[in-house]
Image (tube, rainbow, N blue to C red; front, side, top):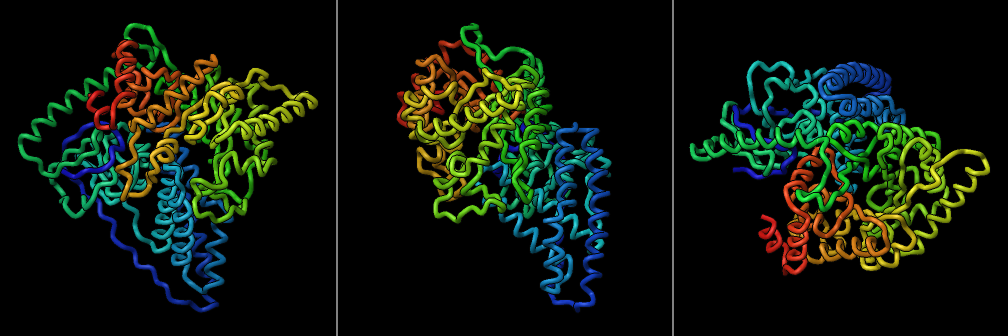
Length: 567
């Protein structure tokens, strides 16, 4: 048995198809000055060839997986048109008198390292997209044929070091039963596309490629993140039965899509909403039964560019989401960059502790023009749907009041200009700093709602960097201290007649669902594919049962005791 990360749910049993990537030799020696223009011309031809390949892949992805998944390849194509990125390669060829493929390797390495150092898991996984584009360009520069999973003729399970979004998009769904890789995370585009295709997937395994052989019998358990190579008969029979049970479970989930997220006794109903990164993600949210958007991460509008997005650019994006979701609520988080998520055009400082540094609302209050422009765009777009505003990284009431003062100035300006906006628009904060959770009863006076960002709240509360592999085992969502902070936030909002949601990973964790339900959480925001699973748990229990479990969890001494209680 090989452990990994459960990237896409499901269980499959089949024959291994081992996909090996052979190393590409890049010559690093200097070349003559009169050959440099030839290298730049070679780069141009590789770009054109790569664009044609990606357009074909995009069209296939749109046909088989939908426009939202095909958008990945539009982003890849945009990078191939990005003059800043391409000029960096050209300038490196000229300045260092090196071959196009070596210059490309150096520039791609710099870009991938920038993304890999970002704390946000979803953004960090974008490094794989940059690498995918770089690999394609290098192969086209060197005339190396591209691998493809499109021409399969029998059912197989793909085993690979890594799979690019392009690999996944070209998979022949008729024959690819599942896949397992050594690289990747749950939020990589490859994992997202596997979930869209409903292909079980496990990523982040150790030494899988060294142990697997073509034709091996493989079990991929995408529910638990396990891979079995040549399992014994007992394990094989057990998984044949588990696969049948899971298929019945999936059928049951599909029937829940349009049903309310209410307890079995109808004593408690909550909102199940989705987290998104771009307007294109709305389609997947709606397809999975989302009742709105609980977190729209706006930082994507600010990345992969050379200057801040204009008010009109932002307005167009926010308006698109508002119209797509119609009357359903959409919470737009104001810009959450800084520290670990750097924008090169903002001249952001190097910091010893970026997680505790000049970031999010702290930076935006120092650079008021950034926040003011974003708030104007949001308020203008609010005339087209039910938008809400959320400030990230709040630690005290002064920050909320400063942000709200700027918001009021924006409203006054829009009134003078005769521009319509939603005068009832709600404003809330992301509770992700323990200090904010502790003084929630004070902060609630200045907001309409809270949304708990558990990813940071947990690591700040337990003093654990979840990206540090040596101590990541200590990152525990069900730590009693975390649960007590969550209860404090929910109670404070309810005492004031307001509401609390949650937009961290914990909201989509079915293990935590009974406790959060029992604590009185009003809104659960998560990855769209988790919605039905959480809804099934909510609909399978009474509210009293959930409250009893939550109370016992608050009295438990440690997380393990709580997990046993949930089981």
